[in-house]
Image 1 (cartoon, rainbow over the protein chains, first blue to last red):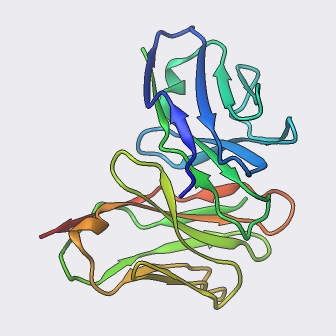
Image 2: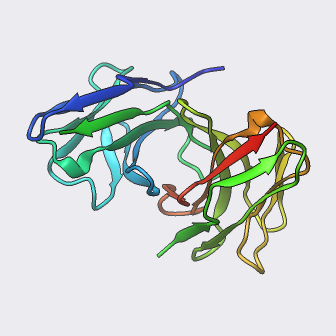
Image 3: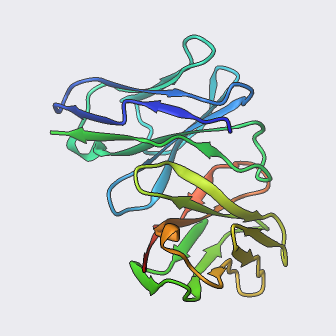
Length: 115
Length: 113
């Protein structure tokens, strides 16, 4: 079964450093998403991406965050200057169509720890 | 705004016990409803879904019925196994405008042999 692949599985970074979280969505999917889950809290929407543009973003997704699809297969989330409160599990997801009828396929997540 | 409320965990059951995990939602219109499962060390996997009122989603012995009158989508399984131990997330998605998910907090299930 096709999978969404995320790397690394765990990243530790110093506060103020830049991090890039990587995702390879399913090849025929067109819609891409990042969600995050702070330990013990809800899974929260960050951003959706289609046709090389952000289609929606949450209030969490401020100027410190950016996404891109640099080469047609990878989908990355960059945090420019990490804060302690960015420590969370980050999930990438993809869908074949942006419809509520279709569920997401999620990756296994990257656990980001900011120290 | 839209929201999903799940019962607090952890839920600990013996093998072959009956499982119910409660989920209620608040949303305008008629959202689609989902249950996702997260096994240890893995991502979120779609377990089942329902896209309109009175629909019943089912998979791997799990069932949930979309109840508009009670705004609920409770997850049930008649006989749990140790391998069902995981975290279960209820989620909704609107059917127009934004399709992003609103998740509940997740309910950890532990099944003892």
